[in-house]
View 1 (tube, one colour):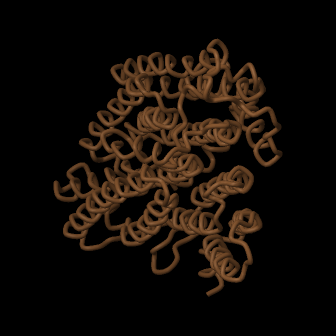
View 2 (cartoon, helix red, strand yellow; view 1 turned 180 degrees about the horizontal axis):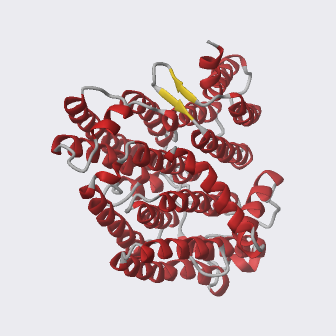
Length: 490
């Protein structure tokens, strides 16, 4: 009984903390209290530490499975979320999202993601994904005075319902063919001669997972939703759910032994190439920075899928590493955007109360905010994959994997996509250093870089540089990831 309780202890701590915060809301004299956010940070830290108390094995009649991989994935997820919540506490002061309900929804969403990563049956996976989805839908519509936020929530809900339907249809096909909903049932049924009905069911489930990763052609929701929701919610969407779905997708592929499905290999290759195409071409014509980053994230998900197209252990290592590095880099960019949004006298707060962040706001940034411009330049160059930054070396490893597997068409497409994507990343840097500031986007001359925001930003920027400039550090990072991911193949 004790082992059963310890199995879900991290998630239980977060849900219990969320309930206490709800109780605190009822008796608090003021709703706009940053102490609720600090309570969320403490709960996330405590949940992360409690992971050490969990034991490996199957729990709740094989509904959950815990091993080193799931423990490490949860630890990373909780740590990144804690950083975001700490930043939100400072950045959302004097704005609509400094509501304690916001951190409550985050707590429930991350608890669902933690259980989702440990799911060992399709029933548990579906329940956890739906709890996560409901929280994300609510977050999208929290800014009730903005029609852009309301529109984004409706679009996300409708298209998310389509992905849910695909998951349920695929699960029903799997149950019809195997007679069970456990991952072990699929492991026994997947062979080189896998029945067509089972293969279609697994493909539908994979498509539902790719929808949450916003891989093309399941990306249609991402640009509109990212643009319509408040900036802090966009940062959360672009970091936490994507990271959780990468962890889940890697475990899903190798736990269910999907390497035997030759058709799935071809489909993943096409999806990866389409994601690279969309992620490299569409950002060029964008005028709004959040839409640009939404399309950019689609291209990066294409690189993650390229690591997995041949279902090799080496590909799994680099898919995880790519996901972690991308999360660190894009998190740094969004933290700087959150910091900047409070430095503009006019920040698109018209009758729609939207959260538009025009690329024009970056023009001339280096003249008034040199630290901001330098920091975001490093992160953008790393995202573009230019040396000597983090993105270059991880993309180089992706190219090496594809070449070793004689996937020359995929390598060519990935290289071309990288070259094209350099244009819009360098364009943003040019705006900061060589363009004059827009007259209606004056920057307030005051110090906004509080320690809650400055420490994560400089830490992530240092990560983009130090990880690959310090001899042997990158190799140790790969070895550490390999040792954790190897538990999937035991």
